[in-house]
Image (cartoon, rainbow, N blue to C red; front, side, top):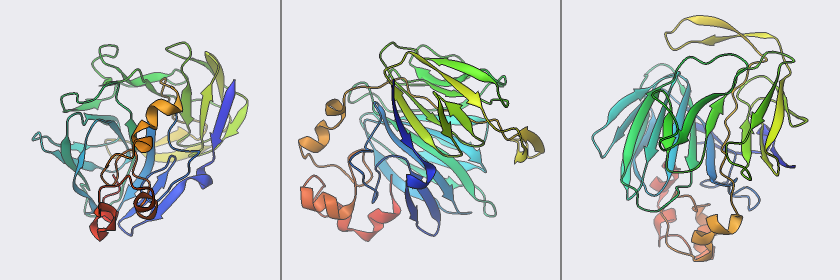
Length: 304
């Protein structure tokens, strides 16, 4: 079994005033050649957006983008005419495909919105763009709960992506052990702890720690903490939750690094915030950024 641990404090961080963002993998001005992707998992951003602020209209292509609301409300609008508000208990999945523009704004003028945005490399180029918002089914404690699956392998309350990738959430009680099994032999899994602490494959992980696992078809996950914590439910009420509960997001797709670095090696032009955009200075030096795009100050406000 091979394990790669990414501690919460080791993530990239940027404070734009209206946006506080942590990057598990290289993104925007944060670049670490050891942390470009994990298999098909390209981006895992942990964002907090101030009231009334957000990401203005910007483009994407050839990427599967999953957003998971943790607190507050996120307003989505796109070039296909979709206008939706995402809240805890829901996820949105967008296939950028041949190209799409969209915006993500805090729907509240008084409260921040906190959400995870996750990019998954697509299984093929130039799919037809699409958007889907899913209300998740109630999850059972101590049981992995699928929320995203490959096309045709989920259900009514499961989002789907153009990739052999699965996302699960898992709320664990203290000392409860669950065996996580890969959906596809030879693939890997990435565990990300949202709250509490766990022991995964023998490693202690705390809030916002992440770990990639390869070379195993299954591994144990054990809940470590058991202290109550308040959180706000989707209907606005306060609920008591065990701190030992955590959410785990896993991507079962893990491939060779060469496949996913082809865009960099070819030094093709890519827009700011694309999967291979790793910062203004480095892009200009290495020659794989569209001429002048990263020099525009407004690009800094669109890190996606």
